[in-house]
Image (cartoon, rainbow over all chains, first blue to last red; front, side):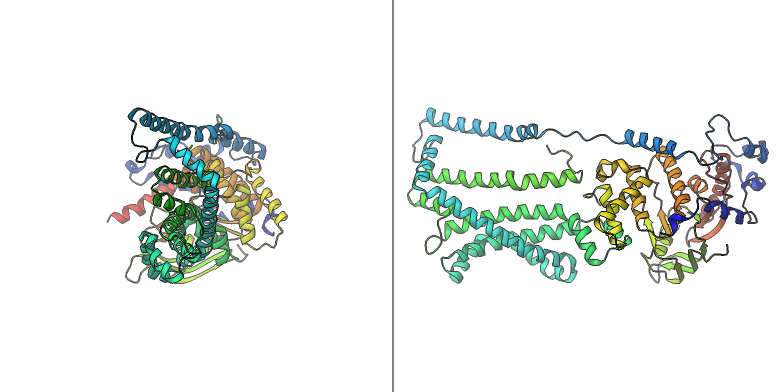
Length: 362
Length: 249
């Protein structure tokens, strides 16, 4: 580190060069100052002021009132340090962290209360209006149907099967979608060629693939996974591409200036900066996985396909058991909510908090 | 000035398109090692472009640029990576710079550099927890981490309030005196240039040329409210106005 060892007097040495230069010491230029159009000068001292005092006087009497050593030797560093510290304290506010239990109550209480109110209203309706139980079952009927499915072991089996497929399918989609998204994000020609197709696939309901998948793969797990992947991969790819596109160009510039290689730039700057978009893509990818899975399970039934939640739904329909159908819908809904609350919400919240982007969210 | 200049520009011109406006024209400039040069000009005079050329971020259309080693750069925005703490941001520069330091050594060096800018206490804070002035000091520490003799600064304090800027001037001057870096400091603030520079280079607009130059006797730190700085500011402003008036014709 050769530069750090230079003596502090560097500046002084250079100063000696400056004497012979034109326009050097300011004092000699006062004549030039008074000549130009005086109206233009809006400087604090006014146009005429320089002529009222001789230059030597001004230089030699350095405003005694605020003098803490303007032209003297360097101020003690401790003084600057203290001032900077004071300013830093004034300009930052300590982040107030709400305790976790407080956040949990704030987050959990409102939806739970709403749920209780809705179920109570539903139960009140069935008690007061006395509708036909086979067309409008009450909450108790639905709970009983779910209890029955639990006792049979069908419910547990269905949830376990579907979750396994959903999670496995999602992970495969992440493994395929991430490199594909990176490739698209960093290679513009490919993005231009493939981008519209990926966006189209995202719009296409993945259920549309079920008939084709059955013809290709028969009634097997492959059919289910195919449909899940076709649902999830485009979302993940699109999320990642959008995330990379939104990386501020200034961050790339800084990376370049700091001497990052292409790979370092991608790994340490671009990818982390694209994380919010990527995470949004993952979230949507999971939603599409889960929806596609349910659709596939409802349509493709039998064969070597296992018994999932969609199958449970289809079974309820075949038996004209509305309580069981409603119960299954609630189970599907509940799984979606639980995954969101337990997996995506904490990850997202943590990421946003680390980046100071938590404005407005609880 | 007998030593070889840290930065030498000869006949540098820049034109983004063949039929586009000439942004820079015939810039000749030599900056001595350890010198603090301020590049002053109105908005759009090409001073940031000139800095980008010296930094190697862009290539000149004509002329040659020689820089002693590569240059470290500081921008108007701190441009810290928002997901990394202050210390990790500085470490990143050490890692990219291939200083060949181990992880622990990088950590120690980063803390040392943060201490230089009086931010040792804030090492584990993330950029959003820091004030604008603190962020710029982290950026300064990051630029120092690159350990290059030349430091280019593109209006680094323009977005700060006057009180903070005043203190950061003092801080920067102290760092400059301690480290002996060659600094090229771009600004549109006349007083800032008169306060900081040993040399103030005035640029004209369209095409950008260096039209005037002042050397300031360096007899220790100046204060921005000092008579020396005021007088120089008045004079430089007069020249700057003349340049601007010329453009109205």
